[in-house]
Image 1 (tube, rainbow, N blue to C red):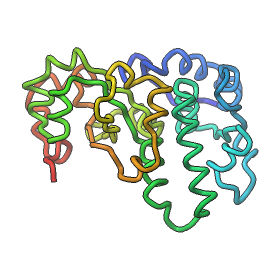
Image 2: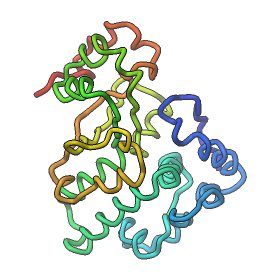
Image 3: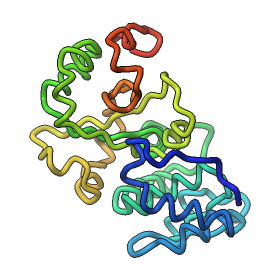
Length: 244
C-alpha cells in the first residue's frame, strides 16, 4: 500500500508523528491494518482489514462487539488508526456511545443529535488548552483579538486536532480547514485538557447532544501557517466568519 506523502514536521501531527512515520513506512510493504496492528498495545482494539466487516453491519457496532477496527487501505483510515493509538480511551468512549445509540434507535436515514455530535467530533474535532482570554475571543469569533492583539498568549496554548478526517484534509493544507473545538467544562483543569482519560470523561451524552463546539480555522493558529504572520491574513470573512 503506497500512502500519499505526509509532512510529519507539521505542528498538528506532533501527537501522531512517532506512530505515523513507523506505520507509513510499514504500510508500503503491507496493508494499513497490518502496519497499525504492529504498533498497538492495550487498550487499543485490533486493526483488521475492511473485509472483516460483514455486509450490512454497522461499523461502530462491529467495533464495539468485536473489539476490532475494520480498516481500509487509505489515508482516512490510516489517520483514524493513529488517533486510536494516541487516544484509545477517548476513541473507545466515542465508540461506546455510538454503539449504545445504534442499539437504542437502530440505523435510520438520520443519525439523531447525539450520533451527529459524536461523528462530528470523531471526524473533525479538536481540543484546545488555552488561557481564558483566548477562549473568550474564540467564543466571540473575535478573530483580531484571538490571533493578532492577543497573539503572544498562544505561546501558552496547545491545540490538539483529534478528528481523523481533518487530519486527512491537512495533508494538503487549505486556509478554510476548520476544526470543531470541544468547549471546556466549567472549572475544568487546563492541564488535563489534552489528557486521554480526562478527555474521555468529558464525553457525556447529554452534553454532546447539545453540540458543545466552536469553529476554529486551524491555519490561523500562530506557527501553523507562515502566511498568518501578516495581520491581513485574517481579513477574510469567508474563513474567519463573524459570530451569527
